[in-house]
Length: 221
Image (cartoon, rainbow, N blue to C red):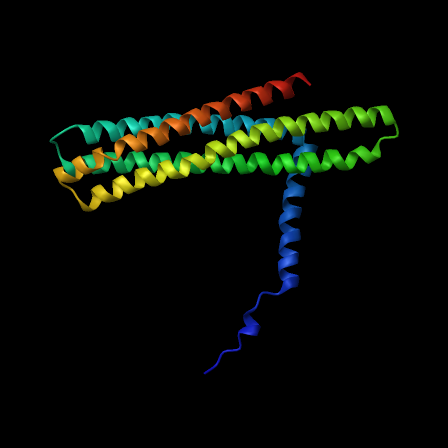
């Protein structure tokens, strides 16, 4: 029997309505927070701080995971299942930290877009040309600082995935090959993993410094 798939096609009106509702929820949230005294600028700085802290925690976790992988793979003997459990735990913690970093960066992007849209729109409300120009210059400067910051955050974020995949490969390989030969095989992969983790840490440290610079600049305004 043929099924008429046209009846199962998504309704464009429903999609549009859902989109409006999602945007409305975000707008309502920021509106409510402003009534409570928390403006978009304050929320932006707060979320940048949270993203910075999440990156710092993730950096430490990735360093810890690499140390765990190195120590487990370089030690002969011992219970292989115990070694697997240690590596699996290190991977899971790293993955969780990475997810937190991604969520915090998305939160920064969300509030920043709302802030800049509002700022740009409200430039037309000035009656004073000099004040409008001053505000426009400040908007341009803040956008430039933000672009530099989010670029650093995104570069560090992108480098997390290859490291996580490398960790996952090692955990998965050891899971199905619990023997001394497997340990020896993984040791040869450790050098490339170390290089990836070190590169990730450098980018995270750069991103953290950019966040500190941005926070300090916003505090001086």
